[in-house]
Image (cartoon, rainbow, N blue to C red; front, side, top):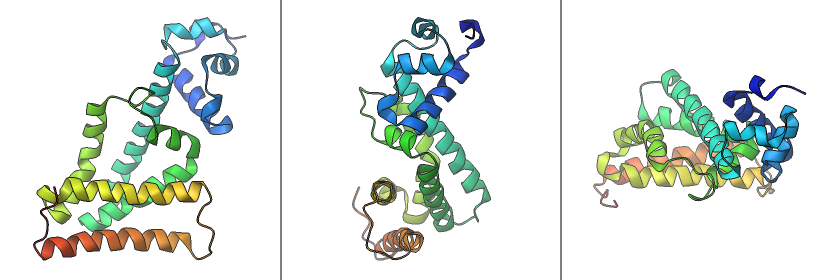
Amino acid sequence: MPYPSRIDYDTLIATAVELVERDGADALSLGKLAGELGVRAPSLYRYIANKAALLEAVNLHTLQALFAAFEAALAAAPDDPTAQLEAVADVLRDFAHAHPHTYVMAMTAAPSAGRPDEDLLVSMILPIQTRVAALVGVEASLSALRGLLALIHGFIMLELNEQLQRGGDLDDAFHRSVAAYLAGWRALIDRGSSGLD
């Protein structure tokens, strides 16, 4: 059995993430995590106060990994807001499929049950809102961003829950939906109908 001193915070959180992805969010507990690490549960308290703090830490780890993927996608995409937002959409969907349990846990966390600090979340999303603003203008950017995230997340959740069962190419449907949404906002702005915020 490893000595507790050989455990560090990063190892603890990485192991918790692996546990959630392997066994689902309901499997996450300090007792199970201690068992995975080969230590007694009380030795975890030097790193994490309770299960709520553990949930928050796992969710923050997930979101930081997701936003790092966003940054890489934005850096690699052409200097065009539509192409950049389509790249963000692809990364979000790919991430959710690669990490379904931690994705769902992070995206459905209530403020009192493991959601990271709201100011931090806002700071993380601002680079994406900047790209939305470049497409639709600053005034409409929050509404357009919310709709885009809702479209992407809703599509992902339907996929993860295997509710899109009528055939067809889901990749094509996803890309067309995102492209149509962005084109629709651009057309709305071009017509001068942006007063939605």
